[in-house]
Length: 526
Picture 1 (cartoon, rainbow, N blue to C red):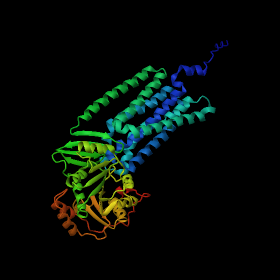
Picture 2: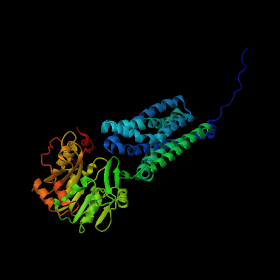
Picture 3: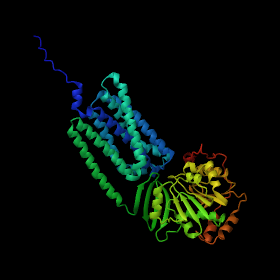
Picture 4: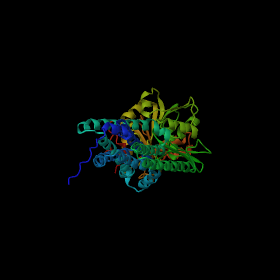
């Protein structure tokens, strides 16, 4: 007996189905890919601040981040396309966004300990940040990479429109990436701090995933995700209260240029940038030059004993400039530091004055030199970006600009962290060679005793236009006659006795130029 044909059930018009599901509307998917694109690039920008306190802010850190994010996007695009063909449902898209939301929200709980362990493992400046980037960012970035191809599959109505649909969605995602980059770099970092930004990025993804599920008529799943987000917010608040109670912590904040850490211990107030100590001040004697290298800077007075005008590039806590200001009442001191927040911290926490004789400028040091028409008796270079000198402040072109700003008899004084000889001395020797292209006479003063010269130490370089070079005994004699300003005369003579008089080989290191200044590579060259 033949089966009775089933009654024909007319299909609902596609537009009617679209009206029934908010998640199916074009503008909704546009918003999803925009937010995910912004979130991903914001995470990449803030990732540099997550790594910098442990690995510095070198080209290796940025190379690691960019490589990992690009690899994650490649995998995400591929996997997202396959997943979309197999499970083309909005609920799946919500899950793909919820997973990185959870992982990103948890990052601030784990990245300090992880980064510290990797940094202490001795993997080196290349492998260390690369491994940290892989562990922290690869998986969440892969999931975020799946969003755009998945959205294309959901949005495309016919094969003939796939090209325009894909182009539109990827354009909107890229626009989101631009907004996320600019918003994070220009505004969020100094306003919210690294941990708060990362937490916020994760919570935003969880909220977006919940919105997709709710719009797709899946309220229970949406509620579960929102509940998880609420628990994470409570955990974040608990962590913030615990962090605020850290003994001795005065300030921890992010500026546009630095992660600034301010703390007190045993009567000393410290300022650190990322993984480098910048300044230290005794609370019972704020004008003491506590860090040893700052006292060695005073040896420059042996070559220019009566300065009238001084320029310092790089402020930190301002220990040396404020001591100059106090000990030389007829001296005008100008300081240029690129970071306005550093200037604010120095004046608020380190008693650095601002008046007619102490002028603080929030300017890049090179731009200040280029735009200045003043002549200085002493110019001190003490600008460090994390653990290295910004390359544009270490080139032959820059030193020529500095030389033009020196008055007759003027002296350039540069603080360098490096090794005098041995396998890690390339950075110092390249700097020495580059300075020698501009100044005929150089004096090298390692801050520690000769037994430490194979290790990294502060090295003070004095550069002059005077062709006549002083011997160690002559430099010590001049230092002993200075009368005790900045440091006692006997101490200054002892510092002058550190003058390094052995030849410094430079044939195997480059002259640093604006076109070629691989300072990050030279810092770790073997």
